Image (cartoon, rainbow over the protein chains, first blue to last red):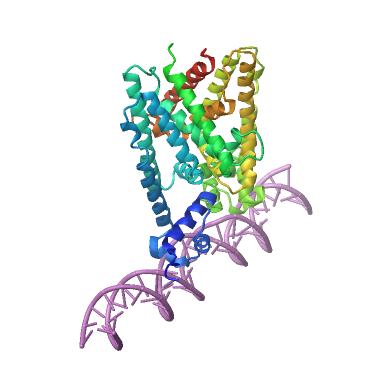
Length: 208
Length: 208
DNA sequence: GGAAATTAATCAATCGTTTGATTAATTTTG
DNA sequence: CAAAATTAATCAAACGATTGATTAATTTCC
């Protein structure tokens, strides 16, 4: 019985994240969150002050988790191309293992409202961006990469992944495919990685 | 005074589109729409039946406009690469001249809810998708293009543009850029077109 | 005069939040 | 150690405000 102690605080966060992902911030009511988490409505304000407080807390946790993940790659003593390939692999895996959250992030990013959240997401993303920028720029400077529009290449890499996550029907012609199905997701992930690695290799290293 | 006849119906559509783009569907109230359009609240239900009816009508109008725009390209007697380049130019221009709407579309697309809207948007997109698919596939079959993952290439083209629109700060190295500024937008548009055309040329036609 | 357009007023439902009270757990005190 | 005091967690109920929608009356226009 003592071991069965349920952490209501965490239950609220979990339920809220799930609901925010499914129905959006505005589309989710505090009553839904309470019901889904099994907590009383008042607990939401008791722990987080407000509905927005819950949202902010979710974002903070996720972003903190993201930040610590890719840092190591850039320190390895490998070629720029190899670094880029590893980043692509890590990026695709991370995004596609958290598709619902990634969708929510982009949804909030596309809203003019809630500037606090906008800035938070922006900062988190620009971190990944700078990492990729550094790798490509280094590759150009040491002569192993062609001179390209670096920022546009980054938009291509990130945009491709986001596009697959948000509009999977574009990639998957065959019906019955489901990104929630682990088996199907694995296939898509590998296709995405293979495509982006092939694309960047050809585009960045082909002599012309 | 007679000449000053204001079309309330259209005023409602305009106001609603503006507000939906800015604050999302759930985040926009019918009272806001009424106030912004200068119409009485009841007029919304009088003309469109419901709030969702307004949304559906906006989507239908836009989608109809989109559908008639790119059809001609595929009929020209030009090379596959040239066709693709024209499609890219048209696609970038169209999206970036309607950034707010495009954001809203993606926002709604990323919601599990409102399946009616999801299908509508999906259908509208799949038209563009099939057009590009046809061009690339033809190019592969006549030997002018390499064998590639066609759907992934499409995801790359569309995803790149969406990424630029939704997260402009990511693409622009020099801060202070603003997609609402026509001068800046023109520059970004040209960069995007140049990048995507260059990228596809190299990736699809480089012998290897 | 009659159909279409427009209005103010109102509806029940739901929103996020707050309240006062109660229980459970912890700390303080004698 | 145990009684008292304090804090933390939880609850049902209700708050005022806002939601999308509807009514019925009025105005506009042909």
